[in-house]
Image (cartoon, rainbow, N blue to C red; front, top):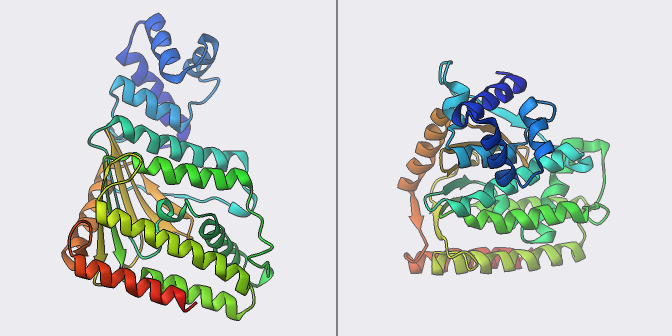
Length: 321
């Protein structure tokens, strides 16, 4: 289904929910914090609704986006590649990130919201609060995307303050989910350290840069260990469960739920993903993540000996960088 078709169907669903045009405009003005003229332009289709606006309206009017889009079609898994060129982001790509942050912000309004993440690389919502780790992942992305055509060093890579702010905002807003579950590949830090050594060996990351990255990695480990000890985020007090998988995780899978909105992601190209709003895809991803718990050890408020040993090994490995 094309985007303009979805937009048209959504507008019809809005008008069906609130047939009184005057009342509908008042509701949308209040929901979207917009003036009357801006609302009318959206209802006429002159200005397309953004993802953030659609999610807010769907929540306010209790519209199921999944049933809306797939009501007249066979419900099969539908994923789209959400690709962003981080080396030269345009306004649309920045807007997509801002929409993602706005979506995470909505989780605070749903006491049953949840996100589950099964990862073989550090999740963005974990390292996004550490600037040198954000820069490293952007650097690796740039290196792999452009290959031998680019020999830009870590030091020379410039990350805009706007992009740093976006990552920091995501780091904070992702704590709004009532329940968060992480399943980490037991070699998740080993993979990272191996990559860092490679970039050092080919002289793209300097010793001074490694010192800063190492400092942030230690801070990240402190952050994770505190989450594991308390079982919640400091700022929101929302529940966190952390598992360490005893078998390798083949890829990174994420599923999140806020009210009647279901999102599933498979991480690609380090910083991008293929994503779906289809409920059947959400269930498959969720079941796959849950199945990995069977071969994992819970380190949140339990497994004290295993937890202490895990973090000690990671710190030792990072200290030898």
